[in-house]
Image (tube, rainbow, N blue to C red; front, side, top):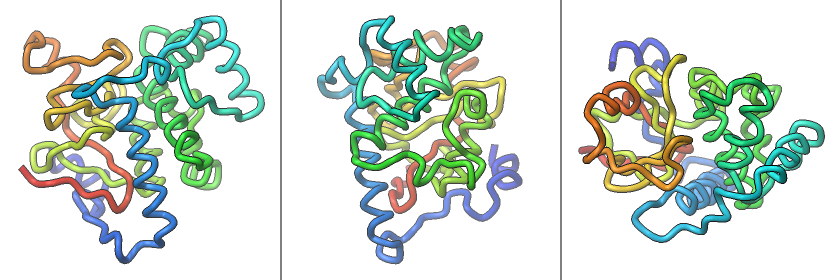
Length: 224
């Protein structure tokens, strides 16, 4: 997929950012947000279920509260996105990007930062369902926020990376690296985790043929 990604992301594709040359406040935010993403995604250790699940009715109320007053919860990401926001707005059958968006908003919240510092109207990448419920718009939002796209064929996705099926376009699929260099993943259909090593090959071909993954600026993955 290299040619497609080079055309789309230009010289920022696979571009390592020297953390020593960054504003250290920005780098600290990258580290804290990634740490919180890893808390919810890591399937090599026990995960606090509250980070993902809550009462469905409460999840719907929190979904509405975010849309009306921009209040982000620190827990319940799967329930809020998959049982709250997506069905409320008629895309309950394809909630993957909204789930990843909610995971990201909550990671910022737990890290002590407003997500709007990086995802906002000025950057045209605000994390709201009618903008980022599509996989391609979520990828574009991450890119506009300064997150770096890395090709899976060349780099190892660390836990907490946002992974994108094929060209990171819509229709498509987005999910999160959960361990074993991306062989464990977490997504809307498998919030408890999925082991791609033992998944049906056809399912992998249709949903999990990763082309690119995103990490926050200053966090650089290893090469294969």
